[in-house]
Structures are given as structure tokens and as C-alpha cells.
Image 1 (cartoon, one colour):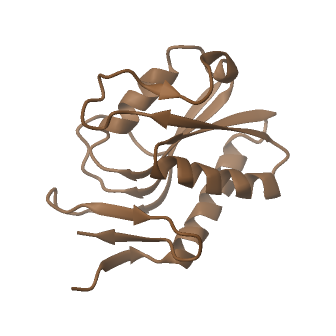
Image 2: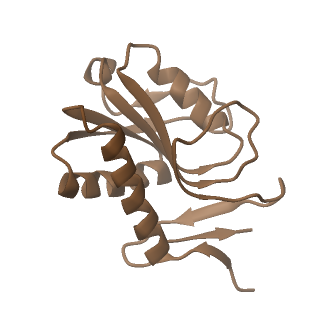
Image 3: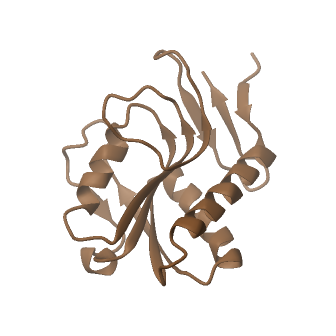
Amino acid sequence: MPLNIILNHQQIENKTRRIAYQIYETFADEEEIVLAGIAANGYVLAEKIAAILKEIAPLKITLCEVKIDKQNPFNPITTSITKEVYRNKGIVLVDDVLNSGTTLVYGVKHFLEVPVKKFKTAVLVDRNHKKFPVKADFKGISLSTSSKEHVHVVFETDNSYAYLV
């Protein structure tokens, strides 16, 4: 059975570039920002955005990997950098798919334990089925799908794609 592809490799590249430009426009007055990618695919997307930002912007980019137990978000959240590194900085929390909003809202909560200058969220696919009042400030595509459908993103070097199951 063929996959129901919703984004092909080139479309993902284009949307990632557009998100990077939107982030730059939003944070143009900053010297440094933190791109916090939710493991695993959110971090891959954050790396891709960071690479584009390094080409187009004079910003210092700090990458941060965020580990959240998606089945039980009350478990402790860990980050690859300490709170002192992102204190009083602009932060963009990045994930591949915004489903119910659970992962994103608990990720936001974690980062707001210290003062930050500006906080935004970025996703490649926004499913529009949220349980929490969280939104993506930067998104590649918005989909209205049934709650039984799931979006999966596959990041490969020359063949990334997103599909609906």
C-alpha cells in the first residue's frame, strides 16, 4: 500500500527555509537565540533550521536537545544545556508534528522556569487537534485530519518526507 505523502523532500526543505527566515525576522534584534528541539525529530528539524540561520543571519545559534517522555510528560524533562545557558535569551521550541499539544505545552512549561526574553514555537506539521491552548508560531503546514489519523515525519539525508496514516 503506497504511503499518503503530505510533504516530499523538496517541500520540507522549502518550509524549513521559510521557518528559518520567519525566526530571523522575529529575533533580528537579538544577538543569540536558543533552538530547543524536542527529541528525536524535533531536534533534527532544529538542526536544519540552525544550519539555514547560520547562512542568513548574524545570530549566535545555540542548539538544545529536549527530552520529554511523550507518554508521561509529568516525568522530568531534560535538556542538553543548563538553565543558565538559556536564561534571559530568546528561545524557539521546535517539534516535527503538533498533535494534541501535550508535548509542546510541557516543553514550554519547562523553559519558563527561568526568565526568558522571548519564547516562540515552531513545527513542521500542525494537526489542528489540540487538547491544550498551545499554538505554533511558525509552521510548515496546517492539516485538519481526523483524530484517528497520525502524521509521521521521516528525516533522511536526501529523502525526507511526511506522511499520513
